[in-house]
Length: 377
Image (cartoon, rainbow, N blue to C red; front, side, top):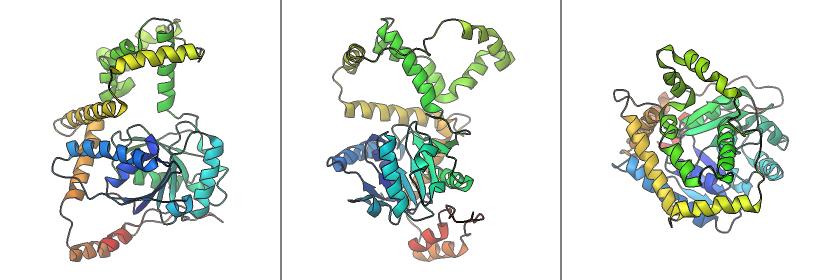
């Protein structure tokens, strides 16, 4: 069950709206700020898709949704939030402006996560004059309401306790938090994607294949392997009984062959954009973005459902987490306990441990579970 009492979302684009959907469908109230006059409509569209996907995951019924409130200022959005997710565009000057305002008005113990896909948290923390120690990168993958991974990255001023609390908060809403061990631009996921994307642009530009042919090569082969084992475990199996050592001995020399253009960047001009966009339009074959999103979500749910039945019913990879997450949501959707029982639980709840506070700075505290239970009681 989530340990987030109240959340704030700053930015309601594709990623921000995805966060809102995951939070609301976990029964968490969310205040959102986005100056875009179309923000309400856009978030509503994402919510429709998220509800549709979750109904497939939970045919017995969904939990009661949290309340979504659109507000006019960042200060109003973060005023009483214990978890804040910033998802504004990837401009450092804009991040500085927004994070400074969040830092000024948010409770001192609130965790602030940034959805940035590549900016280092240290570079963002300089704008936070009060409590930079509670900022972490919380980088998700689209669609946020379905894909469970979130990369957590701390900056030079981030407290280790803040990272631990962030892991708990993200895990409580069904996510798989992975802490990136060293601060680096673009983290891990996007660096891998950037490498594949760069090579893909060359292959299409040089006329080796079309965008549809390249996508087919991925989705009918290694894409299926990656979905359930990743890269290294797949290659371990490819090494046969001798495992990874044999694989590396056999294929290591290939790394010296001129098979890749990863260090070169194709000129990103109008001609390349037109080539890629035209082929992409043909590949879509008239399907709208919303229709493609439905197909994507249906496929993701089906894949995770299939993986949840593997490993003698324990689930495998994302399927194991999916299995636990749907159970968690089903409990939320079940009949709530009587007020008397809830009050008893609140009395028995163990207070969160507090770490020593560094001088002149407040440490982000774990969300108070007993307070939440007392509210329910």
